[in-house]
Length: 60
Image (cartoon, rainbow, N blue to C red; front, top):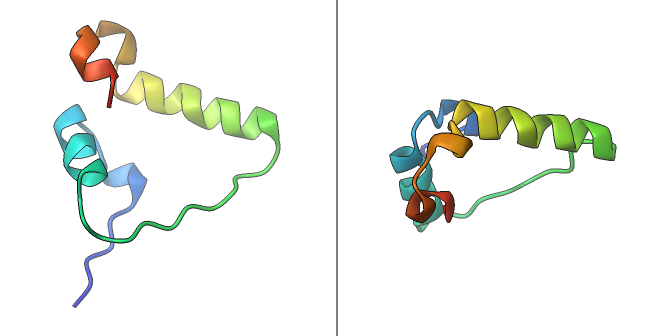
């Protein structure tokens, strides 16, 4: 049985780190135009509180 994880389910840096170091195949899709993509990236940075993270955690 395959477990499917959506990016929306990742809430912490630790979960993101585990996801990125996993062995399962990952499929990505294009979101649309540049503005849509940038808005999504900005939302993810806010969700993970990127600006408050210590420098080592920003690498993930």
